[in-house]
Image (cartoon, rainbow, N blue to C red):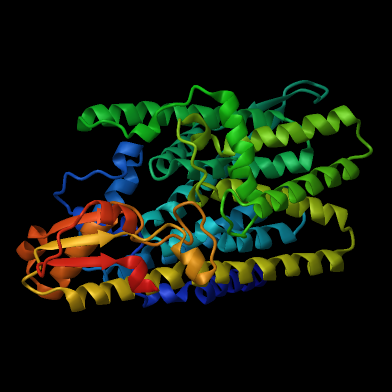
Length: 500
């Protein structure tokens, strides 16, 4: 068993390195990275994450970014999430193996679930986009919290005939569950959804809402309440206001519609990156979801229709609980980075259903290998061509333009930001939220920090960089309406023209 474990882990680690090794040497930044570089320091009063309830992430970013000073040095920081995920992979593999064995689920499940974890878009962002480097901590500690509870729930006979069993749960296990859960929530709230993954495997195996699942749901919700109280206390202690996006939603029906139309759609498209309003993407989502539902109805044909309906409705409720942090806040933003727990849950549901439908073991292996090869190949493409390639070219070309055009007589900069779909038009990649296929200089907060940083790195003269007057426009039309006055002291940066 140990030889198999080390072999599997070696393969998984090798896949990570094959896909993501360019982070070791590639210089670039992506959107928020430049703000964190220019504004974080040990003594800075800047808060980007604490106001969103991510106290632990705030300290991680403040500490790491205070150790670097240039855009090129961001490459060092990318080793933190890459190595962090490599350390966490054995944790995921071990927990999933133990739960699958306990629930008598297919032995193929742990390896291919972790392989899918590596291939899914949130993992790519967690390694390639330094602003998401906390994801490995949040999702893994969420999983650990759930497994601690799962592995410590025991049932002891409490009647002479043994029919009634009393549930026992050691206080120490409850304390550790809460501790790991709080760590997860204060790092990245959606990561805590991984808490429910061991219990999803239990539900798939038993196909009933057992006392184990009810207990898990109680602890899950109680941890959220405890965290929320601690978050409010922290805001009062620091005397700062929470971000508007932390406000709670009062539209449950709207949130249900959002859940089925956005995050669940993204999860059922697996590793395929597509614009969220894509008709083809909707067709793929509906086809896979419909096929999975029909296959489950067929597999459970010996059970009553009412049982099948209750079971499948329960599954959707379970998936909603996994994505709970994004369903209780006002903001409807199903970005890929929020989806890791839901992605894994949907993969497990579809994969176990396919294995149950394909009874012959050699055919199961063939199916799993084909799926695995597709996911790994798609992940390689997503990272190299959907994310890294276009962003790297933009950074190199725009930086080179600033360095060659800037001179000490420049006092004003006019920055024309590129359209969001520029990479799609130029390279044929898909735009997905603010994460894939979007130029780094598209957000309005990027140009000023980017230009000042490059000028400072070029000249070593920070006062000169800070004294620049920098204005930016969303497009050429807005720039022309602004009626800029041409001057030898003005440097005009048109990103679209530079890249084209």
